[in-house]
Image 1 (tube, helix red, strand yellow):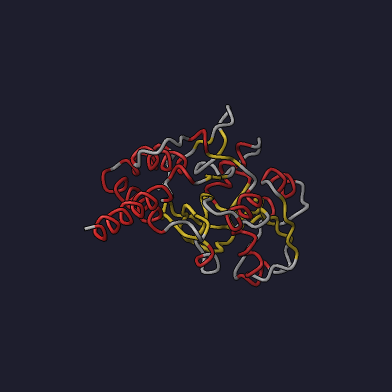
Image 2: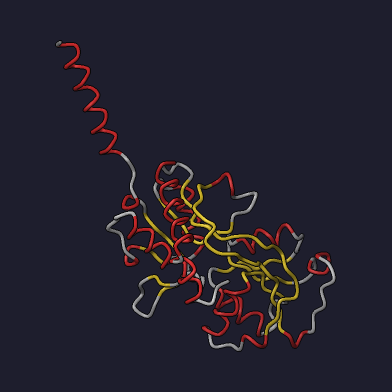
Length: 250
């Protein structure tokens, strides 16, 4: 009888301990960047955008206490470094590439993405193959997927900056020839920084893929599965589509 009681106490202790140590959505540090219309800082500095609203929906459905006010808006390179090095962190949105896939755990896809090569229309650049990009001066965001793809394309002269305001100014002033970035975001940011989006065009597509919520690779698999399940439910019941429609994202 005593042995049975001890066994039961051990079992209860294990269950309580497991519950106490289980990672929840509230235990994660969430980071994003200026990547409109997917994610950005609003006028009050609080994160907003399509992916932010999707994440907020996940918080709510999971009963988490986190809100959009808990999502940090950081320069991409800083967030990218932290999500690789710090446990229980999430950075979004991130393009899932073959290189990145084993580096993180993923929830998604959240939205489609096309990484293009932007140029001024007035330049009249005609790109027939990726070889035509090699000797052009390219602007990228440091550690962004555009940076990786520009390197893979063999572009010899790549200038890395922390924000796209610098890239747009440089390409407008003729200091770089092209700018490698996500096409939809490029249009939003060009207008947001006071330039005319109609002055720019995409002259080449580097990749078409999907954007995800990316988590540190040591994140609890059970939490990843739970968040994926909620996202799938949002897609099934129309909540996800309503958010994408609000931001004119297909």
